[in-house]
Image 1: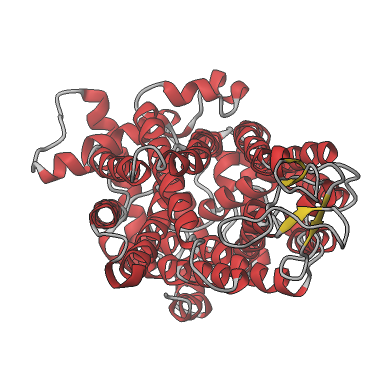
Image 2: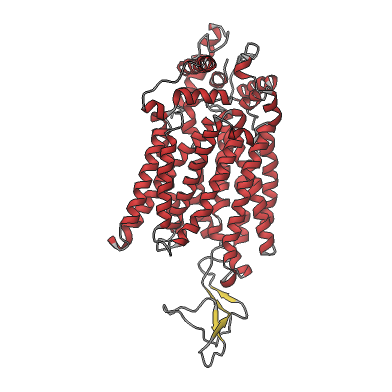
Length: 576
């Protein structure tokens, strides 16, 4: 039987899927802590020059001590200079941070942002490295090795003796963690049949937002950055306890031509899911059409080579999904910085800023399940663009600023809604042989948005609302580009670039809106279309229940015993 039929026969939401989704969820919490923990561990507390108890300091217009200046002669108070003997820090609100430990203030205040940029650069580098390695050697090995190294480096950060060591370790952490986080995310989608991908595949996104909410509470309780950072390793340490149970990807094994290993892996999955009398062999290997499934020898040797991302038809997916990630990170961090300016307790503000993400992670699940990926994504991007135009137009003093604050929260809600659709489009459009390296490359390029966002907001001082103008243009362009992509609802994941070409020929949204038909003058395209349709028919038959065609020779006794019994009840109970 085909891979989706085999997964459905082995329980589409069995223990294997629960295990992989649990691993991806914990790692999503970890990545949220890794990226945004800098808000607390590198927060700059109130400070002033250390000049002794009986010496006065220059003050600002708000009657607050100057942070970086002291009087040359305290008696005359007519000339100031830079702090000469260090600083005094108010640790009541933020506690101990890397800023207070290493005096990252005044002429060194840029080092705080630099440390974050270097860490994000490590994440970007790790995304492409881990993608290439995972597509060549498999999802499981790189995940396990990366987790071990990550935990060692993470604990070491808490003992950093100086700023340079801290930055180097955080850079390495960024590289290594992508190797632990990205392959399980891909594996999760590869072990889900199409009808469950939108719901179950969004679990990591929900866990990301929940992780941020939990982190605000932990930061409130633990106001020592060293202890706090050590505690942030908890999710990956927990995952280490059961990561050994994670299977290899059956789809990846098939894409590499390792048919016997794929069959063994499929049998282990069925056994782990508690399925009895699972057919053996389960996968249709002996009669597989060479043109349909056999990977080219050159492709096997190179694994998921990055150069293959720039060959049609994968080139279109690479460019468009990369722009989608740039748009998402640019707008997300733009709104995150805006909501962070709310007055009040910083820990509560961070919690509320994270809370608004939660419904945005959940709502798209049901929308995508009904309407597919592209129409909701385009609608969300256009809506966020309109919201940002409103932010530009509305004066700051309307309703004491609450209207703009509300629009900013709404804008963040909308862009977070886009995450599920963008992520699903990535996993369902890249061919199996290029899926991990493709997602890694797209997210690598997407880091450009997160790096540019604070720079654009800074430039608002010179060109008012420049950041929102660029964010708006980016969102509208992304919506236009999506018209070129194929809709993936009720389709099978492409295993090869040829399968992807079929999707472009038959499912492209722009062509469907124009009500045009795909060309049939090319014999090879017509033949491949027939094969893809056959896969889809088998998938649809499997959705309705096992039958003689999808079981590849399984007799009625097996069908009646397993297809309508325990498995059917399990599947019905787990519908979302």
